[in-house]
Every structure is written in structure tokens, then in C-alpha cells.
Length: 138
Image (cartoon, rainbow, N blue to C red):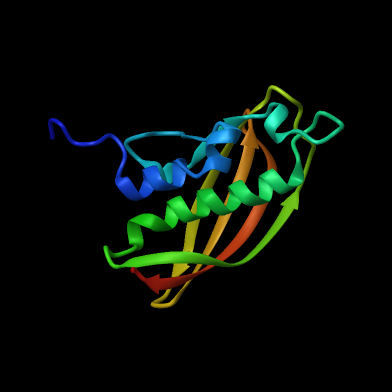
């Protein structure tokens, strides 16, 4: 549709979170935000060893999971993180591009269970299990 925004306002709100902007997070596909996010490892996301900081991975596994869940949320619903468990499988060097894709495993009325995977050049580098509580919008 002509003049339609490329990215839904709710998705844009996620992208506009200052941390996400600082890390350089972008959608893998603007036409399908549920397909995940990507970012390049740089000074904002490195640890002192110049490798991807584990805390950044935890946070962005959660973000990709939320984007995967968004199409299932009604206009009056939102979701907040209830629990995150992540496994960091291998180190990621500075300059690498990390793709993170979330998947909805099960969506109930009040709780959603999700999985997220982070890859570099198709190689799995981290996985996460995310539980979100679905809440009515304000």
C-alpha cells in the first residue's frame, strides 16, 4: 500500500530502544520483522577480549524472541519477559555479523514459550529459551 510505513510502530518502538540503537540492531527483513535481527560485533558489544559480550547476546536473544511473538499479539496485548536461559556455544570475534532468529514454540492465553538462535555465517553461536507473560495493553 503506497505511503504505508515500512515498519509497524510497535516494531519501530523496539528498534528505537537506545540500547538497541547503540548496538546497531537492525531487522533481517523489513517486510517480515518476525524473521529476526542482526548486528555487527563492534566496540559497543565487545568484552575486554574483543569478543562478543555474553550479556549482549542474552539481551538480543530476548529481542528476537519478542519480534517473533509480535504477530500473535492482539492490538491490546503486550508481552514482558518472564525468564531467559541462554547457552553461549562459541566465541564471536569483533567485526562478525550476528543473525538472531526467534521462534514461537507455544503461545497460550497468558504465557508464551520461545526459542532463539544466534548464528554467524550459518554457524550456531548461542541459543536461548525465553518465556514471556502476555499482558493487556495500556
